[in-house]
Length: 463
Image 1 (cartoon, rainbow, N blue to C red):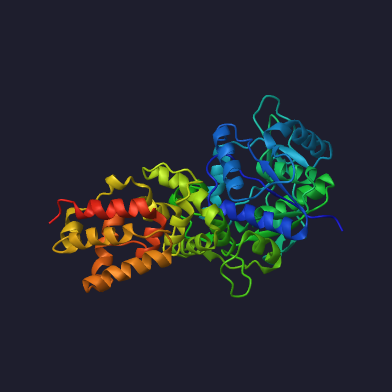
Image 2 (cartoon, rainbow, N blue to C red; image 1 turned 30 degrees about the vertical axis):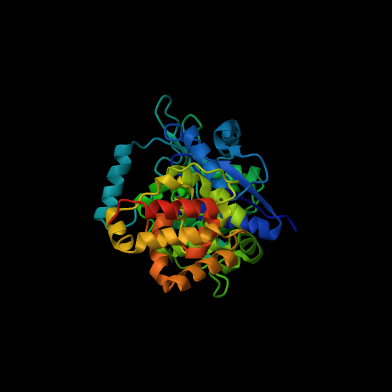
């Protein structure tokens, strides 16, 4: 059996958005699940719109998502001579002809079809005309007019198109530069692609491409057309995968989310990279469209944050802390434990960085808003904080049990309940009335910072 070979073929004319990333992912998962090859082709023949910047960004985004390709990327623009050779074969085999129709003539024919309430198809009027030296033209592929073209689609099922409903399509300009439906056939054949997995919006192109395969005597791949993603607005298309990285999403969460847009495995919702590779089957892709739900994506991101090992989470959040104004090395001994105190609450790396930022602010720079101080550092609160600092001074080994015992002894001696001092202490540590648990916060801060912040809050000018 021939090993599966699939490809992802983006045009570097913009960003990689969620829809394109899902197409790449399904191809990647199919190859990995079946022990096949996943290839990358950059379709950069649109010289006016294709940019090196977009190419780099697409490659960076695919790499961030964890999709590696098995051979060097193919750049379509470097294969022009091969495309022209294939065109020459079609010319010599009389499978194409020159079309001299002007844009005005085509528009007039289109309007006439609309007025007569029928679908416009090019009527082949130029087929058989003698050459017109010097006149502009395009090459049209001569479609068969009898019978039908059948696509046994891996996702959509059998799709039958009467050949009479397919017009003679333009496949190249007069200079031999190819157009999409022609060049994609040549490239896929030369790359040995066995399965073409792409969006359902390409389904109407497939019968045309099958006829080109047959005209060139090339083996036909299997086709699978993925359901579209509903709700993928122009704004979300322009945002691109890199924007989700900047918002603090994990690549595992993005892959998990887009995989579930059209594919399922029972009632499971959360999948690791290895889970997706092990469980993905193209036969399980749904025909119906998936609706975009960014709240669900956020929830999945939270699940993957909770699943990440502490050291990995520390390295991931470090750049976001720097962006939040506190430069922290990923190996900082306080960073992984700090992440542990808030990972259950955070929905993104941005949110996690915001939640743990206070751990890394200098003790003397903890900012306490006046309204927070007025509520939690008033009356006896400062004296209690100073007393707590004194009680904690005596703790030898800075461990949870010892810190908790010293705090409880202080409360008992003063006739206080823990809640009567916990909130003001939390304000002293974090500058906010919300935050992690009291004892886990003190353990992460360490003895020196715990005492320094208690004393600073006790000596503040707050009422």
